[in-house]
Image (tube, rainbow, N blue to C red):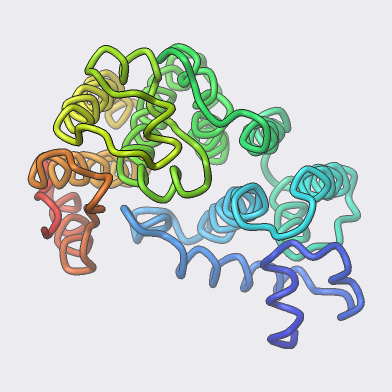
Length: 309
């Protein structure tokens, strides 16, 4: 694989095939490298994941990363690019994909019965992003999360052999909470894309004009901070509602899920530390904090340190 070919693959270029075919081993290495470079709030694949499942989890992550990049960053026709991504998914399920993410994913599908509809929901979420820029109520936003976030948790559960409704329900709580955290963390960048992932009903309740916010007109930022704090409390409640999942799966997956949950809680603590003014500042977890968190989880830690200011 040449660097030029990798760049085309990473950005979903439908003309990538001019570079030639990719082997399954190459495809897995590509997905693993992608996963190692793109995580931020928590480690996507830690030592808690059994080594035999790490390549499969990297392929799932690469699929999720790829569809999000097409929906957020593709410079051409994004709907057409997402259609192409969906076509590659179909080829992966039928056994003859071309893009390296799907070459790896196709190999995963031969070994694990992963539900196709969860992959398709992620494409649908990014299609919505091209035409829907705001959400009136929290219920509307939760419906978006059922497509943009919850499928990821369900795919991970399936990979580990869990398919029951109760574990899926708990996983949905955690994934929706993580998505809400990301919305609060990325308020500024999302507004720059013309998207608002805070319910307009809640903004108006706190005296914030959603149209002014989207247009970049002056607003009372203290009122916006109150709205952000309110949405953060929703995420906190969802984390609490889903935390029981960690005891209902095997030890390794339970610790990995705790790492995800505590990473999200760490960002919420960071939001509190900056007065919930995420329009101006973006809380993150440092490498040292993520390492400390992982070590703590290994030894039974149940709380998260606040991110650096």
